Structure formats: C-alpha cells, structure tokens
Amino acid sequence: PMDGENAPMVCKMYADMADIERQIKRLTHLEEALLILSRIDAGTLTFERKPTDVFTILSMAADNLYELSIQKSVRIDVPEMDETDIFADLDWTMEALMNLMKNCIEAAEADTTVHCSYEKNPLYVQIRIWDEGEGFSREDLPRLFERFYRGKKAKYTGIGIGLSLSKAIIEMQNGIIRAFNLPNGGACFEIRF
Image 1 (cartoon, helix red, strand yellow):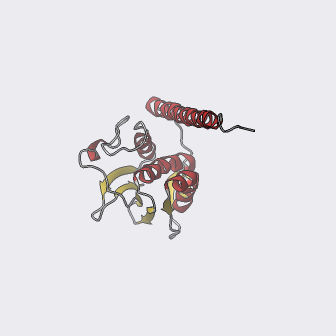
Image 2: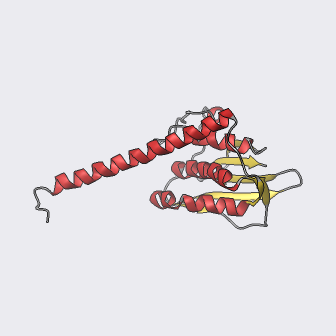
Image 3: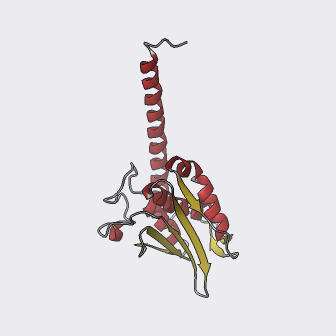
C-alpha cells in the first residue's frame, strides 16, 4: 500500500517510465523507416505485386491506426465501393497509405473525420485520403515529400520520414502521388496507380 506522502513520487515514476517507453517506440520506428529508405535507395526492396483490392488495403491501414484515431478522437471513413484492384504489394502499399492516414489524423481536430475514397477509370485507379483540417500551408506543399521535412504546422514529434517513404513505395509500384488543399478546407493526398 502506498501512503499519501509517497504517492506523487510513485505517480511521477510511472509517468517517466511511460515517457521512456514512448521514446523507445519512436526511435524504433525511426530506425525501421531509415532502414527501409536505405533499402529503397540501394534498390534492394522487393515487392510482391499482384492484384490487390483497394478497400482491403485501406481497411487494413485504418485498422492499424485504430488506437491513434481513438486517442485523437478522429474517425476514419473507408466506404466500401465497387471492387477495385490495383497491381501492388499489399503490405508495402498498406504501409504507404498508413503514413498518409496518420498524417491526416495528426493534423485533424478532435471529433472530425479522415475520409478515404477510390475510383477506377480506363487509365488509372485513384485513391484519395483527406482530412477536415486547415490544409497544408502554401510554403509546405512543394516540400511535403522531402526526407526530414517538417511542415510549418507540424504539431507532433514526427521527423519527416513518413511522407517520403510513402512516395517512394508508391512510385516504385508505378504510382504517382500528390498533395493539395481542398477548396472547402482540408489536406488531401491523391494517389494514382
């Protein structure tokens, strides 16, 4: 049993341990991302490309971000639309889309939604991920996908690797990605395979 005199010290100790654990997770994630980027640069990252359902990829990405979305009180809307396949590696494409969703979640205000959509036309499959926030600053747009670039509005401790990694993964699978602001507000990522 803890007496009243030691309670503040014990609470601080647990808070410090939780902070250390968060920092270790952050460093581990950074190490993994840097290793992936170095494999991309060396041309040794391989993809198992096969027809993959877009709804499945988006749903799995959203599921992996469930805890963060609950913590931030942000919903992720992945509507089930017509079956749409892309020729891609499921795991790596999910990683790229998770980074985009995570960026939107972290920029969003509480009680808003990160939206996803996809459509197919005769030329390409388009995937969009957007939030209901303020959007990107004009100065940031040309540099968003640069390694280690952090936007002017960056609220969190990210180090600027996620968007660069997403771009590399998408482009290595014959895709293109762009970022822009929606006319009524919100940041949008658009991918075309």
